[in-house]
Image 1: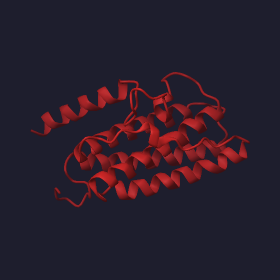
Image 2: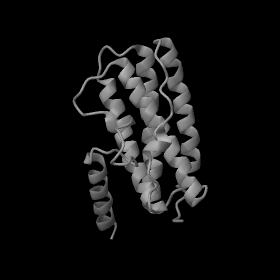
Image 3: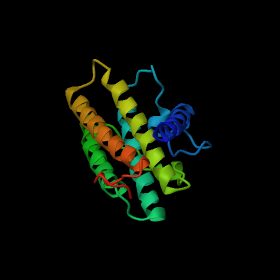
Length: 180
């Protein structure tokens, strides 16, 4: 049973990751955040910072919408707060490099998942995509140390969020060793 469920989750993630629309993004909308990043492309510092903050805006808005619809469920409560912290880590970089902070238009780019179970699955897919963009950005050898440090920190946080959402997919969102 577990292998079957993992196969379905994996298949769902593959469709979400390679659909080109991004996790929880509407297909009609302009690409935003991680969905705008193409594998193998190189980006300027400004582009990287814009896509990173848009993706953090998107995650925060998505998790808040999920809690509005399905209640204050772990790990969405903690991770939504963390996304606000991620945004606050990126903001000083815009100032340092004399860049305009993009408006937070994330609410316009999200679709509420049909269920709490789907919310966990999309959380997994979103964190996988988020990790992938930071890995891609970190490959830039000319990345300034301050930007590199923030991207590394955000990627590590996304790895923690991924583990939490994976527990939610398996029915154990609080990680306490029992299914909820």
